Image 1: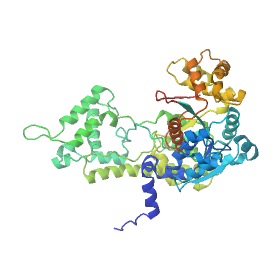
Image 2: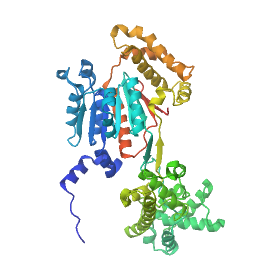
Image 3: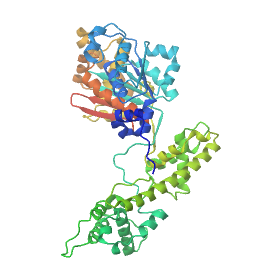
Image 4: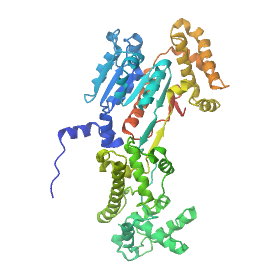
Length: 541
C-alpha cells in the first residue's frame, strides 16, 4: 500500500497555529476567514478589541477608518496606545500595532470621516466583507446603513459606554449551511432503512450468534431487531414507539435478551446497554425540519434566475430530490456515532451509510447541473464538494432576513412594538438601548455627549431626559426610563472602560466570524450588555 506523502511545513504550521478554531469551523471556515476583508470604523478601545479578536484567528485583511488623533482619554482605555503617541493619528498608531499580532493579516488605515468617504469614494465600502462601526453619530449611522443595505454588505453598529455596551446587526439576507445545532440526533433511518441497510440488518440473527459476536453487534442492529419484534407483536409494520410505556417495553425486551452466565446473572454487554440508552432518540421518525420546509416554499427558491445565488440553486435541487428520488426524505447524512462493536462490523455498517450519502449527493448534484443549464449559469458554479457539504448538513440549512438600522431611526421598522413590550418587563435591558439612542439624539442636538464636560453633568441630565422622552413619544410608548439610570449615563461622560470594551469586542468578533464563515447563527439583531450585574439580553428590532 502506498504511503501518503507528509504534509508540507506550511500546512503543518497553519494547522498547528489555528488548531483550536479549525475544530470549531473547519478548514473551509478558516479559508473563508482568511479571504475576508473587514472594515472597522474608529480605533476606539472597542474598535481595537474587535480587530484584535479577528486578527488573532487570522482574518485576511482589515481596513481601519479613523480621522481622530490620540488623546489622553485613549491612553486610559486603549491597550494599543501609549502616552508618547498622544497627538498622532489614532488609526495609524493602532493599525500598526494590531498588524504585529499576526503576520498573516494585512492591515490598512484610512484617515477620513465616514460621511466624506461615502461622498467621495463610496465604492471603497463595496470591497469589504463586513463593516463594523464604533462610536458613530446618528447621521453617519443612517447614511452608512442605507448604502450597505443597498449593496447587501453586513453592518454591525456597536458602542461601549461606561458600564454598558450594545451591538446591532444589519443584514438583508444571510444564508447558512452549517449552523451547528446544540442537540442534533444522528441520522439513523431505523424507521425507514434504505434497501442495502435493511438487507444488512436482516442478515443478522441475534439468537444464534456466539457470545463473542453477541458482545460486538452494533447497537443499531439490536434496536432494529427489537423494533421489528415489537411491530409484529402489535401488528403494525410501520409503527414507532412514541409513549414512555412503549419505549419502556422495548427497553425491557432488550434487557431480557442479554446473555446470562450459568448462574443466571447477565453478562456485561455494553452494546446492549448502549441500545437501551438510545431508545429515546433512535426511533424518531425521519422528517424534514420545519425550517427547511419553509425554505422550500421561499420565493427565492421557487423563482430562480440567472442571478440566483448558489445556496438557492442547491436548495431547489434538494427540494426536487426530496419530491422524487428521496421519497419525501432528505439525503442521508452519512455519519454514524461511535458505538461498541468490533472493527469489521462497525466499518461495514458505516460504509453503507457513506455509500448511500454519496449516492444521494450525486443525485442532487445532477439536479443542480440541470438547473444551472436551465438558468444559464456556468456548469462549474457549484462543485461536487459543495453539494456533499450541503447534503451532509441539509437538516441545518436556513436563511435569516434582517431589518435596516436606518428604518429604526426613521421610524419605519415597526420596532416600536418590541420596545413597548420589553419596557413592561422590569428586568429587561431595553431601557439601556433607549438611553443609548437618546444619547445619539443628544449629540445631534448639542454636538457633545451628556456629561462630557465635568461642570455640565447636572445640567445635562434634564437635556438627556428630554431627548429620551421625545424618542419614546415618537415610538408611542407611555413608559419612561429610570431617573437614576439616566443620571448614571451622564456621569460616564462617554468614557470607555477597557473591560467592557473587551467583552463587547469579543461578542462582536464572534458575530463577524459567523457572518464570514456562514456558520453558526448570528444574533438577531440587537444585543445589550450590563457590566454592573454581568447580564445580557438580545432583541429583534
